[in-house]
Length: 211
Image (tube, rainbow, N blue to C red; front, top):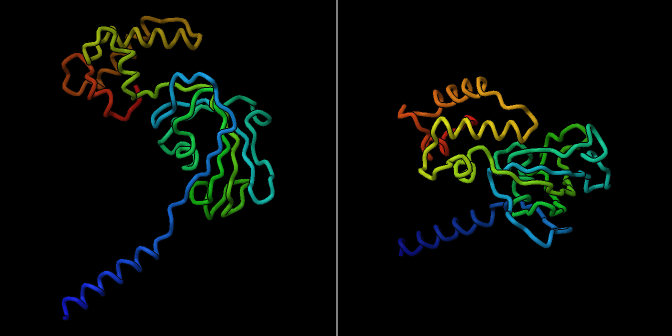
């Protein structure tokens, strides 16, 4: 009899604890527009280029617009590593380049009890966000495969040097072999843990200092 009563007591406590739990805050996502073709979707670790406008849900006041304020340029950030508010990290997954979303973000996933600048404490925020471009993050498997020219799952000094040359040219800078050699040596000192003269897929992917 005591055992039965004890079982009922445990069940009662368990149910009340579950009932006392607050629901996890969620981001409300509305897809405003989407391209007909989508070659890839955003995921944690990707670098996104976005234009955005932010509003207070309480009165509709715009507190920032990347198109109208500052240098009027879109913003780069890495998805999923808390470079931005949690509501963005949650709400901008699985997006296509050219897609536009409206995010309604509760205070717990925005600026919470403190607020920030023009944003009062405990504010629900609305963002109109357009993803302009999606790139591989510096530590993604895709980046490693792009650098691994002979598909042997390790990076040689020449492969890293060639990657640096292409990146410099892509960003409008002239290639500088001497400078690249110094950079490559510095990279291998930091990344080649077993000092075998190569950076393995494991060494590349599971380190945190950017290549």
